[in-house]
Length: 507
Image (cartoon, rainbow, N blue to C red; front, side):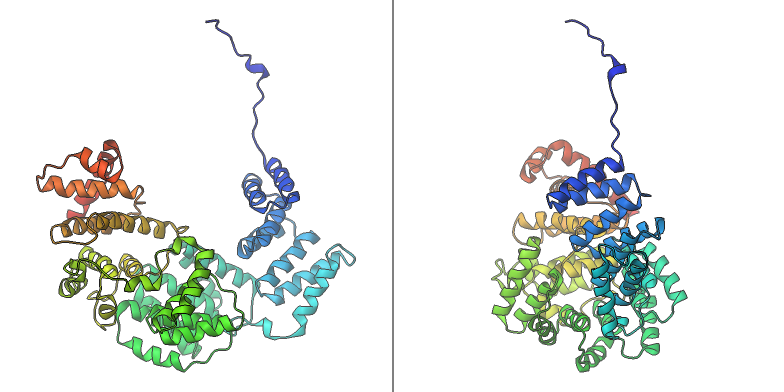
């Protein structure tokens, strides 16, 4: 074969720039292909983070896609880089108007008009100013406090960090915000939630009690306190619920918060009343709204309304298929299974070891005694449930989780492993209980160390193999790998990973 030398002098390297992706995005915008334009502009903003033109265009596309919080981020960054560019000022006005921050929308619109009295957006800017000055109700947020754009922006940044699982970062931001503005009730409530999520339940409750002492009747604080007491199964829950039943809110946000809280704690009649009142008034809800509305409707005897709400939810989030509220009431086979043994179930839920309680919570989701058990005031022995216990309880009750949050995605994968093990027999037997006890022992240890639980099928085959090999049964790796649809090499890899966590759990 002839040995041909490549002339490297004639090879031109291509390194894409922010400008390159920006121009590709503009072409997609001409075709009104916003998802592709969004993709290119995101890449352009990563390559050219100091280019206000790119950041502004990215913010505009985000607004078109209804991603108003992220749009505000981009436009604020652009404004920091070029504070006198009129177009940036106008789009800042527009994004604030979309988010209901009319005071600040007016401020930016007026700044735009200083530079562009006859500009291409002057008519829209005047409309924003006129609308903002029509009434004074819009100058206050849901807790009745005067809005401050910078503080609101910082709070929303922290809230998004919480959604992404960065509770430590969110707490740091919110603590600074609360220190600067002690009466910023929204920040106080979000800080309490962040404390609770990291297991600092007493700090969370103390902060909410302080909010209620200084701002009597703060609805968000009362609802959050009710949820905390519900998860901890405290007797104080009944008193708070009686108080919440007396509240008659008019603001949509308050009705939503009240309805969702009642639904979460199992007070479905009250939940349906408030959530249905929103729907009657034309409220266009998010997936969570239709999830809670469907459950509240079903459990309060409004089955048709429940199915209609669930149909709406599936259009918005097809992944919720299988979590219908009526699926809890389907006929359960194998009445002799451990999940249907009430005494066995309660014993697991009251166990001193966390891993056994996790196993019990998983069984609860499969049990014919679920409604009976969760209505008992002292069904959980743990005084302060861990984040993981709270997650498994939520899973057992069918509460939704967000795949975009790393911790919740890892948790859902861990539950998928448990479901793989469960489907082997369609029930939990005395003999099979051992594999679940081992799995939840491993979950307790691995979840605390941010293990991602990738490849659930392989993990299920690995934990099954670990049990069978420990009992000197004759199952081979190949047989188990084949039954779970993975290779022997993959099974071996995950056995090794799990064994390391098992050694740590036993130490």
